[in-house]
Image 1: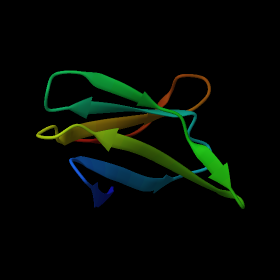
Image 2: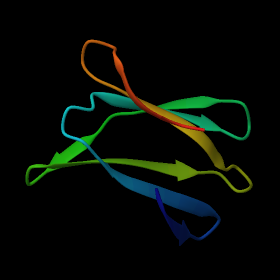
Image 3: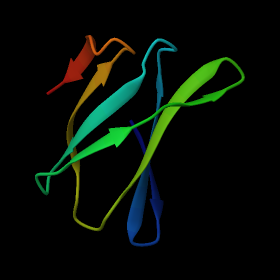
Image 4: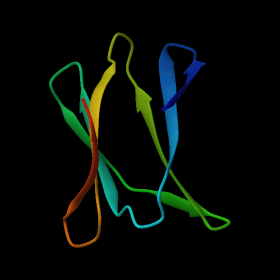
Length: 73
């Protein structure tokens, strides 16, 4: 994911495969955020804002049937 600092928060952005239905992002504060792709011009992106001090520690992407497509730590 790319990181864009915006004041006290960070904007995290990544391009995903068009078959991705959602991404479950695991955050350092113990929570999980479900990210739904935004489709623009035939490409798909997921975006989230992170609170100060919170980091992205892992992510899993899934297709529309709930099958896991990819996993990072």
